[in-house]
Amino acid sequence: MPPVEEWLVENWRGAWRWFSLQAMALTAAIQAAWGAMPDDLKQHFPAKLVTAISVGLLLLGIGGRLVRQRKD
Image (cartoon, rainbow, N blue to C red; front, side):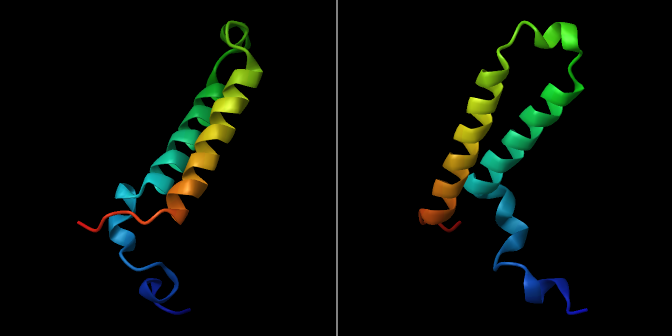
């Protein structure tokens, strides 16, 4: 198997700064929190809202991958 550096993007160690990665991580956190929430607590939140927020964040993440981000 080739070394990690050969199949990852350049500057993968700084990926935590990329908006696209942040948006996808936040989406994963929201979905994990929703899945861990007890059903009686979920009743206070519309499921469609959670889905809409997740889809919106994923779309922003796609946009974040397409837009040039500054290099630090």
